[in-house]
Image (cartoon, rainbow, N blue to C red):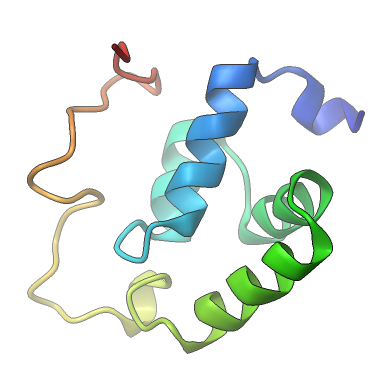
Length: 96
């Protein structure tokens, strides 16, 4: 396993993948919480997903205006959906 990703627990890796799949979660939010650049997230997704799933995800990300903060509407001023559980101090909220 890549040493950059080996420091993450299984739950953290699941959360990173979940955030990467979410259209409204920017790469900046993933960088803020997990200190992974966009390139790191892409490498992680390529490693963890089936190749066909990775290709679908990449196609979605390339066409998604909300995935990159610079392309987002100025009206969206938060990292997460208002219905999403709070994430603080770079820790994942407890899951049930």
